[in-house]
Image 1 (spheres, one colour):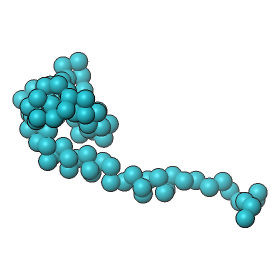
Image 2 (cartoon, rainbow, N blue to C red):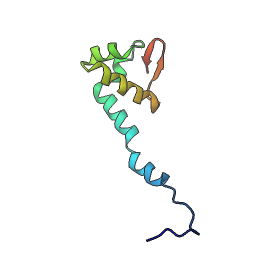
Image 3 (cartoon, rainbow, N blue to C red):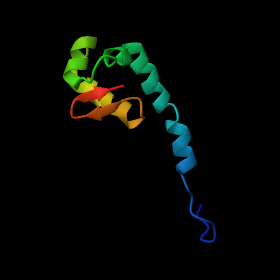
Length: 83
């Protein structure tokens, strides 16, 4: 079926919002389950330090910490990641 040239263009943003809505909450639940916020409570740590404290892979921990920063759960500075 051909698209109607008189119809407005399709905007997929609503479908994209629905399909990714759980991402932020899943990051929060995972951070809580890993006790990430407890690890960062005393001082800022780099990803390797966090991984060591929590018994995780350093590279995956860095990716996860960056996701936490992206959704506003923690901050990243020259000193490392912090609550």
